[in-house]
Length: 185
Image 1: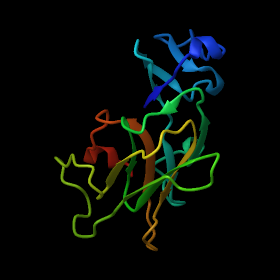
Image 2 (image 1 turned 120 degrees about the vertical axis):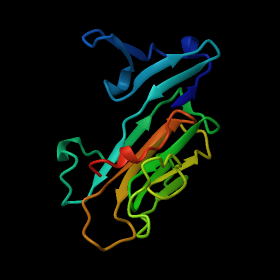
Image 3 (image 1 turned 45 degrees about the vertical axis):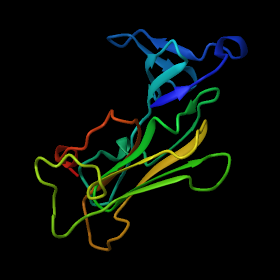
């Protein structure tokens, strides 16, 4: 994730905290404990962060422990905002969807759907395209500071399935889909 900030030192409290119990020591955004990890701070005012993955598994799925399933996240990252030019909403899974919208307004900004293909059944082992079958990605259309994103699965099918859907926000170019990402899905 890439975000930008202006005049942070002059107008806001220190918003980072260091967890010294981790090895190596790790920076986090202060208000989100260990949910929002700081990856890089550049001199041009760009902050790279790691946001959690929204996971939604069907009831019969055993692939993800239910306590690790978080299908929806809401963040207020002000004074930072997501760069609309450098971030993507990415969805991995079969018949899975990811949604991203501003939390202040109740309108959807971005939707991405990852389809299941009966003919393909599973992607080829060298599949690395995130083009809609088992993986979808789309640019974020607005700069957002306050936003919600979620994952949903089994959206087009009534058939019993033990799949999971994963939705996450990622810096453009930082993620490459692999069929291995579906293992256990």
